[in-house]
Length: 235
Image 1 (cartoon, rainbow, N blue to C red):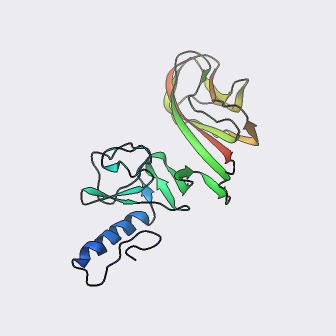
Image 2 (cartoon, rainbow, N blue to C red):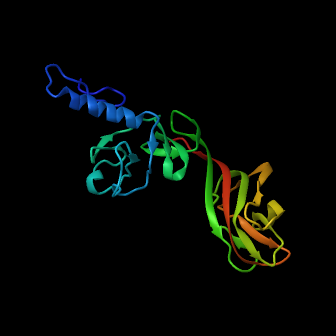
Image 3 (spheres, rainbow, N blue to C red):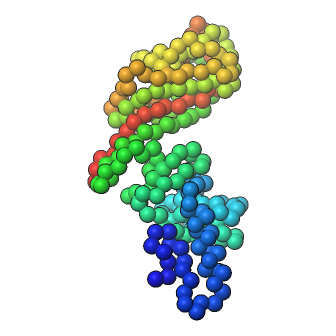
């Protein structure tokens, strides 16, 4: 046996020379994989600059020195990379998405609440987008709430003053313009919690709708988040 079973840590062999090389590689792997933080799971090639200990989930179509290591965790070490194949059940924090993910079925899956032996999944997800307000009236926010999702809330915060003649704003959906709240202030820091008294399932994809109250918009910016539950069917 030359590697440990779970983390693939290299083992020192009998009468091996330069034992420190094997020990150091094992420590680098352990340091990267314990309390795993993945800088990203979407980079198609290694970053130009990186620090020892940085970890990335390598996507399937990776190029450069990551070519052929799709699905592996790449750990930066000594100016190069150590590759470790993850096992089902590993958990990691994906830094550039600010979410926890579980590895199963050959991919990192975010928001997992529960998982069956045949990979049926209960998932709770928060997706976020910044919306630059355009001059005029009601406008869709480019934030997709997917089909077959049970929506619990749609929250928002003004990050740049909403200018124009509107005295307030509403957040909702097409046909339900005030579903998540109305009468919120136009100054930076004003917010809408948007928690629904009864979670609602949407069988077609929808987007939040921002509407002015008492006038029209000219400019401004909001940060909007949708909080929803979804499922994955068993294999």
